[in-house]
Image (cartoon, rainbow, N blue to C red; front, side):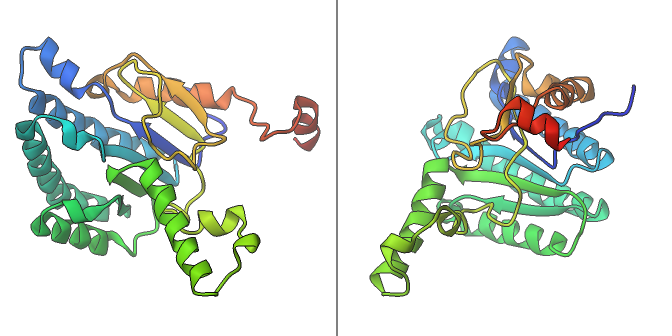
Amino acid sequence: MTAQKNIPRHVAIIMDGNGRWAKKRLMPRIAGHSAGAETVRKVIQSCIDKKIEVLTLFAFSSENWKRPEKEVSRLMDLFSIVLTRDSKKLDKQNARLKVIGDRSAFSLKLQDKIAAAENLTKNNSGLTVVVAANYGGRWDILNAARQLARRAASGEIDSSDIEYEMLESGLTLHEYPDPDLFIRTGGEKRISNFLLWQLAYTELYFTETLWPEFKEAEFNEALDYFAGRQRRFGRTSEQVEQDQ
């Protein structure tokens, strides 16, 4: 395999297709989620090897609570197990874990495990793995807007002085670069309330591959697609080419 060029700094992924993968094999849906967790480990290692700076994974959306209670319960159990086991591996890999989303809906025990995993890896300097759990893009923007509203109400700032950067500073990923590449597996072609603000200029890549089947070859295809894109950010092609 030839070395890839134009590697993205930040990759964001919606890991779709676990349930369908299990259904095709006449297995319970949780088996698909367990298989998907193994794919996560492989993609993390690939990101480390390629020196990608940030990997953001949509693990559980704020809308996923609508799923059957039994499936949600088992997902929470799996999340707890993965946190305990994989945070230790991330620490050995010099990777940092960050969880974004509304933690208040999780059990206190799970909240403690999240905090412990983050604390264990907080000083690492390699890949940052961001896990979006009970997360929604609208929730993220709403929280940032509420922060600004409180500052304006207290007289700290004037509403007429609010700029994009001020709202952005209240978002959960404000300390990281916006995603360069968004990947969604499983065949659906929507962003499903994921990083709505941050994906404004992100290159979007959709694949029919179900998440448990998303191997290094499929990841490399997504990276090759990204490498072939011309990122203009509102400029013309000629302007971009002149800067190269």
